[in-house]
Length: 320
Image (cartoon, rainbow, N blue to C red; front, side):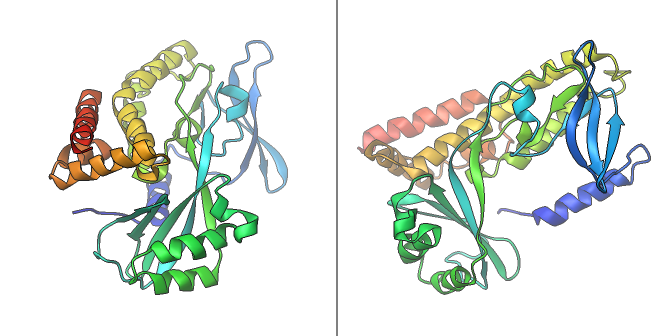
């Protein structure tokens, strides 16, 4: 049985919980740039725009958590995200799902389509559209043309009326499906966190699992007991190095699964189609506890992941 939460309301509750702490001050502003020491290059704080006026905030440690389109990443990190496709999202009203209460993945001779309920009457559909996809070209009607000509006929008949209504309504929204490998935080006075540091394909929904794991690790590594003074940049950098390596057992599993499962489900060549059939047959045999445990972050062993990969590969060879 699966459970889900409304992301926006959940984030607001987290903000309320943070604001309730006496040592937290919330300021609505726009961070423009970091403030660096002219002598050492250490980051001392941020320059902001508050109600159109210049503002400054200083602290021993500045945390950059400005998401997938981070404005500070290019300045400090040696690598940048790679995105080869986008998820286009529509909200279906009163959609009749083949199996209510379950997530659905629609596969065919096109990139994967995800369908899952997000409310009593609302269902989200995410359509993966790679860059330069011929069926989504301007000549074929663009993204809307791909949805009407390729996606609509491929959906279960019970979903088509609500999808067609959403298609006519318009207002499509998209997000790039990015991959960004993590690097160690090495800048004194600064650290990156969340999607600004590390991303994987959102197909498996692993982002929040990684985010909460990172928060728990940092709570321990940067606690007053571990780091009495955040101005001790050498100690902070040492702890951030530990953070980089301690998170690997979980994030490597989730990142590898996200990228590999997308490749298998998208199946851009005949060999991957064969592997896709082997993967589904593996699940049909009832061997799902391990993969689900890995996806959810409950099982954190790369060796378990390796065992399942080899099992799927050998089953595929046997079937083929």
